[in-house]
Length: 328
Image (cartoon, rainbow, N blue to C red):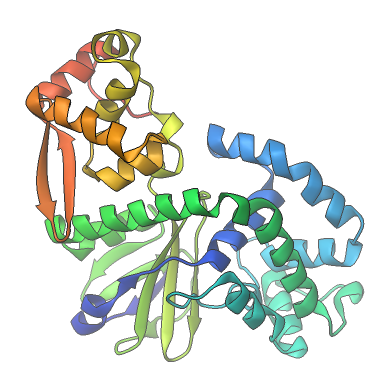
């Protein structure tokens, strides 16, 4: 396994940031994979996969570059420059374009774990990669960026609240289950690769959410390290929670949907992001649920979080015929 040595000050100073470039690269991975993780991704692929495949069919060199760069277990580093706080997509993709051609080829050899195909022995690989990322951003991400940003911000609020409730260990264990894990003794497992540990104490440590179900790590030694992780399922795919018909008949479908989502703490802005309802509507639903004793609220830092009460849990379980409402 790969792990980083982190002192307490570095972890305490770490931050969650949003990255349009990271979101775009995650969407490129999803297009390349072509297999949805949930119904929301299925609909997105239905809309965008034909155009993406047509573009690559017309450009065999870039198609080969994508296959090589994503590799089997390692991503070519020049494709994923370490995110920076408040960096616009255009600024991030400029760093991809500015990669040295010899470094890009070396990174591809590493991701392939073997020799470079002759067709990729050329100097325009960074430009081609930047062009493809710009296509993915322009055609598939930017039109929906406002909604995506709301979802990403909602995830950051939830993770930050989790830090205040249970400390960093619980948050790190949940970022990329099975891959990230707090090992104790100031050690953070970041992946399953057998690479030497890295001492990153004193560096900038970033945690970056993306909406597709993927993740990776990146770094700019010795100053900046990042863990890119998938949003929590309830945020990335709110359709993954089923509202029981009986509960919808009792409370109304929209209000019942809010109650079903609140098996973990969420803020008003998170509920707006994942339900698609307006702020006023969500606020009215929460007020009714609060007055009925079905949800409760508490403050976490600058956010107010809502969660189901025991009475609300009993009501949801009665509607589903058993405990829990999670679907994977």
